[in-house]
Image 1 (cartoon, helix red, strand yellow):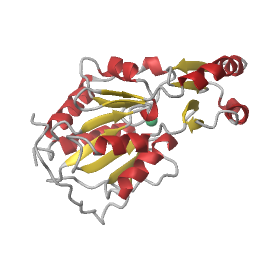
Image 2: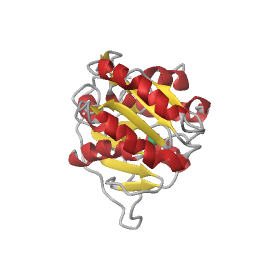
Image 3: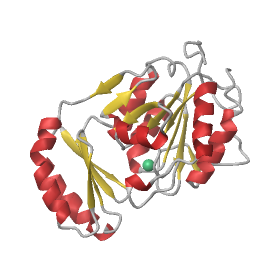
Amino acid sequence: MNSTRPSRARSVTLDPAKPGAPPHLQAVPCAFFLDVDGTLLPLSAHPREVHVPSPLLEILKSLRDRSFGALALVSGRSLAALDACFTPERFALAGQHGAERRDAAGELHVDCAHTGALGEIRPLVLELASGIPGSFIEDKKLSIAIHIRDAPGALAGLHERLAEVLCAYPALGLLKGKAVLEIRARLAEKGRALRAFLEETPFRGRLPVCLGDDVTDESAFETVNRAGGVSIKVGAGLSCARFRLTSPAKAVSWLARQTRTQDGS
Ligand SMILES: [Mg+2]
């Protein structure tokens, strides 16, 4: 793999016979940005329950190598949790919605500016979540996620209460995902992480391709759309993504096909 090989971004041709389906990326040098939960893998009841099947790992390795290293996983999970899922591989990563990032050269970029504010509100968040049966906290240090997959009826009330708390902390923001609320630095969003990657080798100059399933992926889709790239919403729901695939299985299948076209073009 030669990660320094220069390349040029090119446009893609849409297939008018398949509206909504992403295009085939033949002979287009691409940079791949992939959400994990709900995109590459079905959503699980608990973040620790996920298992990355060997065929998926092989597809990601192949896509990374054939695109000269231009593949990053972009997730709400922490870098440590992502590495644990995809071991022994170490991909370029954006974790906690971009609050922490590992570039393709392995260098870490971590925004610790708001850990003090998070520490101040952490006890109150724990107290609020403890009153919701079936909920659990995922404390990722740079962000706090409250999972309420077993208590979906509690989402609106908890969101309202947390929004009140965060009024006193304008640098922090509340992300509402699928059965999860996350408190993190307001500037930590996936679109920002993608822009940072796109300024670096080997992503720079390639056509950005982004797959995601949740509202937390919308900022990444916006970034990709502005660059003329390929944004793909996985599953149902409103989105600014230009294309759609109906399930993680379809998303993985589509990515597998692209491994045959990213052959050093
Ligand atoms: Mg997701």
